[in-house]
Length: 350
Image (cartoon, rainbow, N blue to C red):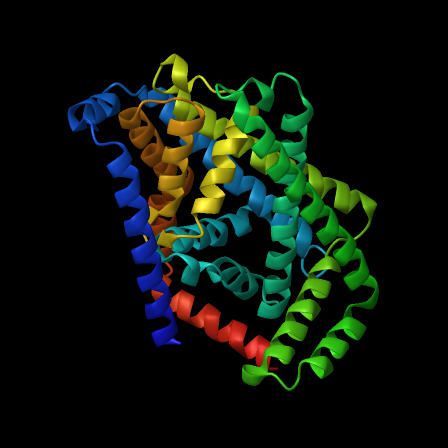
């Protein structure tokens, strides 16, 4: 396991190095004096609003998880906030190894099985993708949205990517309906069909199907589904508003970007996050900077400044409060990460 992580980290570092080199090779006349000057001119009030919106985003996530938990255990929104903030702090500082800290802490606090919260986490991803797809669909079809970007020639590419995302989410929704009705039968078939593969691949895949089906069981009725959908869209819209506060903090026309077009930046950031290093990010910032420069004609120095600031506000701003909440409980993020991964492996092997 350790060798695998070391190899993945090495690959990520190499790819990020190539991206950074190619980006700054393209910007051969990058002026560092102008870069620092741009940072000095930022309107701090906008940044504070952006951070407040990101914390609202975490609050909405805790509320959504409370609804997911309702069939298993009654919990309070206030009680779910600390594990939510600590979990996202772990993700920011540890990268993907910290992904399961949040469901692990919630399972411990609510005294429910960890596998049930992994199931919730899996279904949460579907709601996140679905909500983002809804916003993308609105941006595609509204005439004043994506079609009015500074480079209209990119619109067709964004539209096609949006349609692919919508189709993928629709396919996932159909798959969710099938799993909710016949999940155990599907898992049993997968287990027998792929039992010959090494490393227990068939069993692991079957367990993922069972977890997903368990997560779907937390949606208790049409009203619950509607409320979860509305909250999910709200989470991503609030995130878009936080992006807007950061871009508008520069007070220049090039960054007066409406929320509908900022979805492009959010999508670029999500795609770039596939190449992340713990605590420093990398891929997210580079993708955001490249998008600002090429799609919105933002000067390189300002694009670099804005890309880094967006990452700090939307991804790293949770760290101070998350660490403060973890300290009284003597929670060590690396220990929590290791425990959560061990719990996940145990849930798969059971």
